[in-house]
Length: 272
Length: 303
Image 1: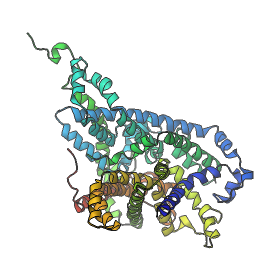
Image 2 (image 1 turned 45 degrees about the horizontal axis):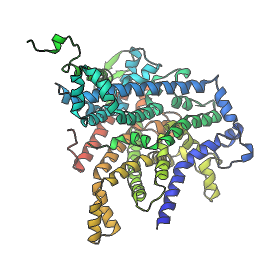
Image 3 (image 1 turned 180 degrees about the vertical axis):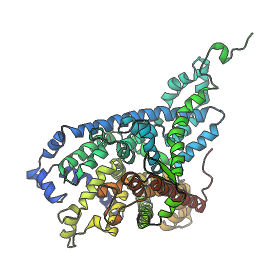
Image 4 (image 1 turned 60 degrees about the horizontal axis):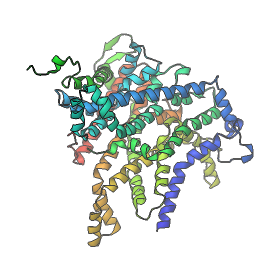
């Protein structure tokens, strides 16, 4: 019985891991084979080559690396900004009793429930008016404060001991000082989880960057890789090598700290 | 002696006005990037507007124009996709979570990580792989396997049924691990005494599952279904990646959001796009309200 269970689990694991393995192996095949046969099952150890990676690096004078860099910059900035701003809002909602507190919290909940996809048309117009089309700012700004992160930080902050804040006041810190010097270290686990959630979200974002980014050099990785499939020819080799290179960093970081990733990405199930 | 007030000590940021400064970022972005676009979408849905040109108020005309074949395809595709993905992504992860949670299960962390890995990929990267694996060529991955076991290759992304199959399979592959984790944490919260008491009463494995496990997991299931409804109806990137564009042969891959994108950016019919958006919003809200009502979870933990 236990053997059957483990065999079944192993089978499912095989299915979930198979695409990664085949993607990697396919990136090692000679480019012309890819064009001819697409993604096939046969692998000839003899003809394995790193040519796809070379093509990827040389593609359009290093365009791939521009995309990679853009994605990196946007992810980092968006994550940091979101962490800072969302934690401030969540903290304030939890700790201070001020007029409008409940209203704002309700608004946060409402925003969480509304699909952002229905806002993209007016957001596009706004971005044009603010002249942030085709810029990193355009990608980041509309979503710089995440209502989900605010909710999460609020819940977390609700559990903080009040003495922390009071001791800060006694020591003469102003409110921002209290937040930055006393509270932030205590919020570190929450920062960790939200950082991963936000970073993954930014790295993999598709719809909004697709709409805002226009010129080739400004694209992020997902949009850029997409654009490789043109009606004029498919750059399979660049695509596969590019895909592998875009996943490897994430997988490596994941394997180093699986717990943090899993907590971060499933943080939504934290109740009440 | 004069009391030390904030004013007298010259503090600018006091305990009184600090909260307003703290929440300012959210309030500002809310008004600029949420409330205004939300109202704008609503207003534009009643207009004939093409970008930055003149807008003409046309009342319900856009909504009436929704009675077309494309909208029907989009609605059908999104609805069927949502139902199928929920059907796949609740029972299967639950079953796997129960298996993984079993006391005799070894290599638990390996399995957890293996199942979770797909969630880390970008939709585009993974989608491109699925797109080429399911390509119609005989030599493509899946077709090759089919021919090897004696079946004939299929025109995967050119027919309605097979396209939906690929899309649902892709979604299942991607989110299986995440849902397994949700269910596992839910399972861990079930007090073992309940199972022990049931064993004493002679309950079978199935009875224990149906009468203890499932009811205890109700809130997790509701949560998973809610985000699946949201995810299913707002699906766009997966389909776009499969077809390389918002358009697909016979609109087999057209989703509600694809339709918004098409109308808004390919045809510059912002009014129409907004009308679709409002409709989508109503549908998602409606489904969620019905769901909350049916499962009696109306009182959310707002406190």
